[in-house]
Image (tube, rainbow, N blue to C red; front, side, top):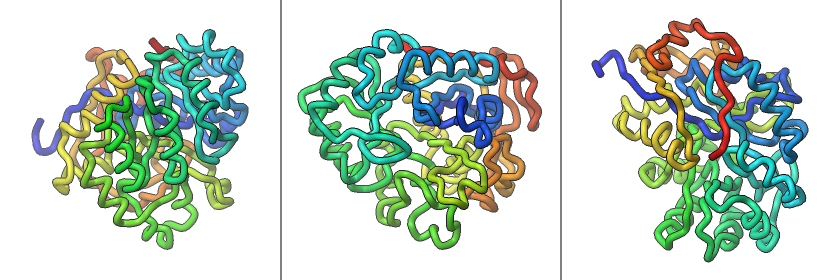
Length: 350
């Protein structure tokens, strides 16, 4: 690696919302996987909270069929449950990467009963990950529901000191836990809400500078960085929709932290490639990401995502993806895609 060029393995993002099918004015599998590839993410896993939630084998197979004709990257899917579809688990467990459960109100139903949660855990294959959306008011319940169990559980998008402290303690007590953090919780705080307005609306919400500092101070305790890419039309966003696009800003933001001496390139590789691969038992093909270290201003009008806005618009970052190769074949170069939609592949759980 030279000062002006950095090479990385293909990055992995296990937490994206590509909106397809059902809300393709916001994003679809073509625009979303183009955004992923341009952002250095060659393997991504889509969440189940579509307009019609992915809570049945039929819905998952429909989603897979649509994705096969559109994706430019390796694309997998998580399955969803409120505990009323346990009979679907045997049919989907070999297709889905993980099972997503919501312990806080987001865009659908949520779970707040320990015994109910335990029944779901017991029905899902014990070696496959359960992902939890759990915030400050539900993290104690989440940890209590896992007491005495050894199943792998991933806590998504931790926003605060309170949540991370409890996860670190639980890990030390032997819980089989991993956790992720988003770039927006690392690079923004509630002090930014006045400046960025509607673009600051997300779940979990932005927290204090104290929380933000604690996430950085304990970055080594966090297993993965996950974009929580949640695109909306600008009209919907101004109307109060939760979530921000992140596939094309995550790596540039992490490179900013690297240039500032906060993190190393090895940590970026660990949290955006090695650990996601290990935790979710993924076997991606051989990708190489070339990054040109040259300062530029983040301009959402240049995004491949349909979300042509960002809370990070105007931020000067130190580098961007210049080329992606797959098994020595160039598939992306200088903003041009050298493969077609459908030439990526759908990946399945193991």
